[in-house]
Length: 355
Image (cartoon, rainbow, N blue to C red):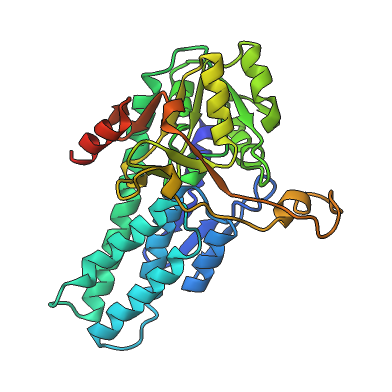
């Protein structure tokens, strides 16, 4: 692995040394690479809501560590009081971003290790929480590596690849989901040509995806979101790869706003559309995309955030959903750490989750 890429992978979005918890502040990228220390559940909530940490897997890992760190602030010795403290902290953190299923999944998993144990002291319960957070972190690293291998098996050297938003190494514990096969291909001389949608309104494609791919030496071209059809029509795109924040039981997948439009375009142009989904992101309790809660964000992100002065009339009505749902019929295959899943998704996802 070259030094440039090694430096990228050293830049983990979540750092925990056993005592201190720090997050890479992704709102400062690409200009500044700054880590912020997380000491309270309020610090973590703020970091998740304001996208200082983002990407469903990274949010889950960060929240797990955050819940452990907050548990250390409990001063008493009463286990019933400790459980209630941890439960309320988990509920509070979960409210930060409702669409990303890994957040709720990780917090539920963390609480489950102490929920029904009657033999615990506060100290042993805290240690169980620490161990579980580290396990969630390590499992995500392994899952991303596996998805990279499965994803690469679907791609050929020299392909043009379009991606939307950021599902790279800074959106996960390490390596990324949909960008993992691109990194593997880079190591193995595949010579991919990647086109990154800028991803309005928060520009995760411009600020994060193009930054990290360029940092790793990948051939990457930044385009505006409304240019996707143009590069597809020119024949420059052979595959689309995207991440996922929550997948329903029927294969509908919620991802960053604009993903659904890219999927529809890919279908029209006969281009395979691959959604990379860790099994922790598959929500079998949600029947379809209509039941996924879509986060709505402030309108200022659309017309104020990146400008010296507002680019629309003050007080203009806005609609700013953070995600949209791609219907399963537009998804060629779902790539998980357990393998590649193809239609019918309702049947095959159910089989996958029983493994």
